[in-house]
Image 1 (spheres, rainbow, N blue to C red):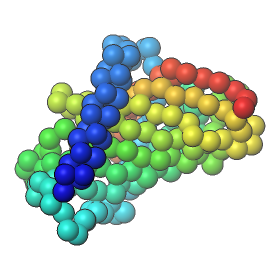
Image 2: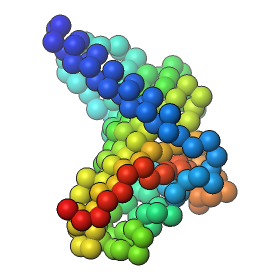
Image 3: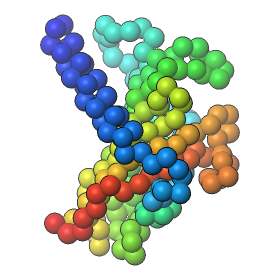
Length: 190
């Protein structure tokens, strides 16, 4: 039991440190973004994840959340994304109200263009919703194919996210959430 608690505390400290890093580098205005990330949850594939036994907070929810994304700017293309949300539901709604939430995901770009170069990419993201209700976090390219083999990049993201019930903003199509992203590190080659 003590070992589980120590591991959980280590994960919380790591996530807090990454969140602070993301906030420290976060641009204050949208025009400093290197691109726009529009996404839409695949609602029919959202499923709860259960741990049996689970000895933690009974109000804690673990949910798999697949979503599709359209990227413009530095990254230009589409991705299929698979995420895990960890949250604490305060009011099951509708609309559902939850406390700040953590999120980790993997994105697959079968064909994406980066600065005139095309190929496939794998990206991991980690972040969450801060107490003001805005998404923030970090992203990193984990591998590339085609002309993007050996490509490396990382950065931060922020924004209002998906706004229920229909999502949609002036920048993204109806039904899609909006997140801005910027590039912090970039390297081509091995």
